[in-house]
Image (cartoon, rainbow, N blue to C red; front, side, top):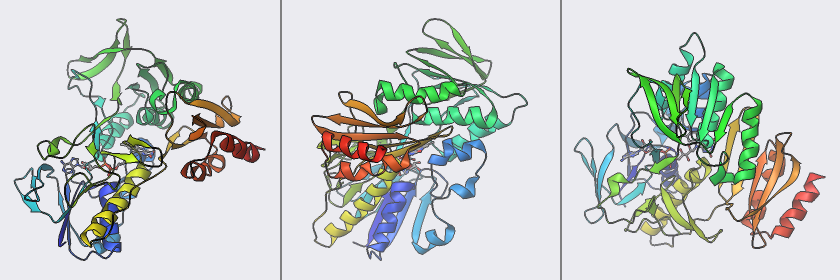
Length: 409
Ligand SMILES: Cc1cc2nc3c(=O)[nH]c(=O)nc-3n(C[C@H](O)[C@H](O)[C@H](O)COP(=O)(O)OP(=O)(O)OC[C@H]3O[C@@H](n4cnc5c(N)ncnc54)[C@H](O)[C@@H]3O)c2cc1C
């Protein structure tokens, strides 16, 4: 293997490059990226960067020296448009072609848009550095705080709502079609518990409402019309209704695409020398016995490393290792640090085992069929993080409850 191409110049792609080098790969590595920026960190985009507390140099994923040592050739600003797994070539938007011996696909995801979303100033999404600069400029350049409407009570929408409220003093309304915030991730009770943190800070969270249209005043947004005909006035609207994996450029490549790139347990994407990592990967996670796609920082980083290590191993005639993980994410909203480990589901039993929901400081466990499936902590890091070991060891529900009870004392 002489030339590895990494498509996607962000977290998963960068981790793949680092592990290729630390694993002894001395050949050429080309990193293809649709954005013009060198790899940067996304979590601060809805938190300290959006608040104006951090600037661009503070969110670089690596310092220039560390990047230099990796000896990468960056091809930025021209995304990949096609993959040919027989000729082993990638075509770029600027007409260039890259020939690869090994390939890591790490093109992540993009924001989902509303059907018929108008093109008005003041309507934002939040995925990239450029999105975050546009939103913080809009929030920060006013004499009077903006009236902000966030469509979608997912993690990024709620983080941005908290930042708009706290850092810019905005009046913030969050509109959610489902019965509670974060229902898909946390279930209705725990989602409502997180929603109450916002309620206490003056954010107006309205669940079970349908957005009909976004309305404008000439060229600028003026409000959001709901299904019942009422209008929520807005100077700024953030559409935060989830993401779609960036797989468009892989259509016609022969790889299986199904809400992501379908991989085997070793993150091989179905062609020789082709691995995938990060938010766009759908793979069977043996630890939980189910296929999943995870949109969290830690998994993207772990998968970048695992994909590179398996690519190297197979190129040397060695066995690839199945990638198994306990999914983990954190989220910062007002003073709450939310941490979630594992994979809960809608039929889980959910039990608060420490602290109290009213105090916004608690831990809840999720269990199903006698097994611990997930743990949620709100501002309880010392309680929740040890649950990772139990999840990795496939602990029973009873053992997990006993373990938590011992620590909660
Ligand atoms: C605002 C925000 C806040 C977040 N906060 C948290 C948090 O608190 N905790 C947490 O666990 N996770 C958080 N996340 C999620 C985390 O950042 C992602 O899981 C992680 O960035 C995924 O990394 P990735 O490399 O798979 O994909 P991405 O970071 O999406 O990177 C993919 C890259 O590929 C590029 N690309 C796309 N198409 C092409 C193409 N055709 N050719 C070349 N390049 C292409 C994209 O431009 C992008 O640069 C947050 C995400 C956002 C957006």
